[in-house]
Length: 72
Image 1 (spheres, one colour):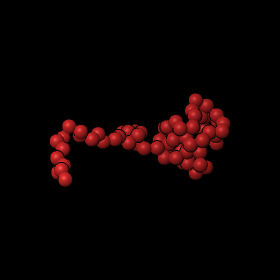
Image 2 (tube, helix red, strand yellow):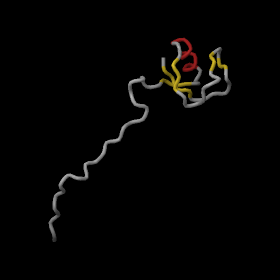
Image 3 (cartoon, one colour):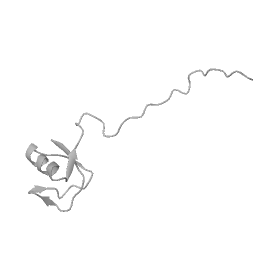
Image 4 (cartoon, helix red, strand yellow):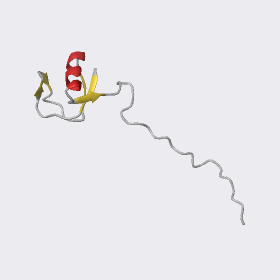
């Protein structure tokens, strides 16, 4: 299960080695270990691996013809 560490106060938390991780890292853990960190507030669920981490922005099409304004 993929989780994102939201905070980290020690290298070993509830028997789970996080010595090479920092807050904000996405970690793949067993269901049991992930559930422990989620329940205790050390982590949050992370998006599936096949989804991008950040939302993609749409790009405006500035080359499209514009309507002409009427002069008053």
